[in-house]
Image (tube, rainbow, N blue to C red; front, side):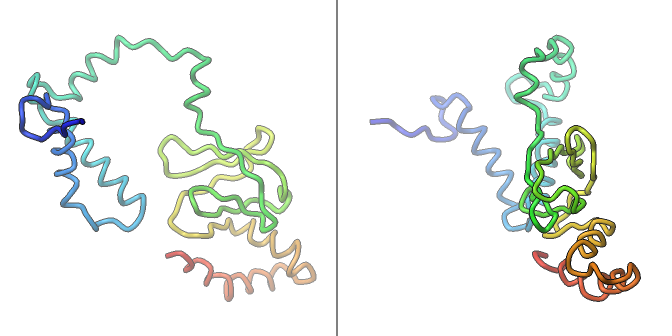
Length: 186
């Protein structure tokens, strides 16, 4: 039967110690985050700190080694890049919304029922929505459950619920009644 490795024993050769050390560093943050973005911030700060600490094995900082060694990497083969492509396809709902990371983002009602592509920006703070290769919308990523562009919201109401109303009446309705949806999921 297998024998469990224990930390701080020479037989483990550092594998368990590294994991135990990393988990020990995460313990102080237990319960200090409410959203996935908060957790990402904590992990990124921890990774930055770990990459700037000297290693016990070679007395060098990982960030220094990375700077030195990255020059020797060859570019990825073109055939491999598709595995790293983060484009996702979604069908636009009857509400003229697409779902991304458990939040909904609006598009024009013209795209209801059509397939669109979602490309997160490299900074991870926004998404771009494409239809047949053309960009149709850009949204900042938020913690709100529903994310409407005001023009989309207006077009959605004009196309269905308030098709007989004037633009001014629709704008007033949006101002008075739809702000309550922003509070959902907060």
